[in-house]
Length: 266
Image (cartoon, rainbow, N blue to C red):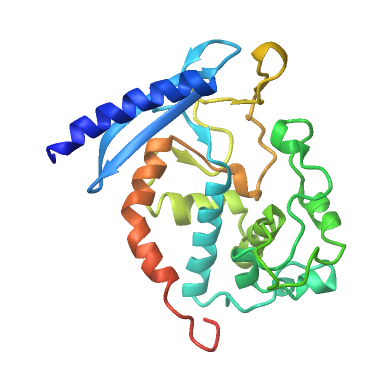
């Protein structure tokens, strides 16, 4: 271990303790990776304010839009196998879309440049005010044309990644969850990671929480719904597992991302 590293980790620990007091956040997990090894790993606060359960690095979290990297890896694996092309229109794999949306390419959906609506008219599912949309609701949202023209600018869209999940199902003939589990998570050797609920019995799970309300109160968002199927924020993992994997894979992933695609779109 480098001589400077223990002192740096001690400073990070004290800084995080101060930030937790200042922000009054329910909980936080921090990991510092150095040369592919965890030099610092610590949990602060609570996994569930309603019960007072202490947060640990072993708790599973919804990893939100980091889940998109799993869907994107799945698309690239199918592309490498010659089962789809990045320049294919999504309408080849998902029928019944608005014609303009059906013309959006897989590449545009991956890069959030297809101009699609972000979450539909009501994104209350992120706060547990309504269930996450099923396929019929997703398709209903995508009967209207894109919000902006494709390739105009970056236009973030969870619905776009929902379409990519449906494309994976169409190509593989398997549910998105099942295929991602054996072709991405298990193939990468990721432990403590599931594509969606349920997680194994006895495994600790960190709940979500609202922002501060009156008198500094927060409400607990259970987060244990099981109806997400293909939706991008579905993956659950222990944060140290994800950070170790991203740390070890980021350099080759960046090199691959910078490679120019051949003219045939493969």
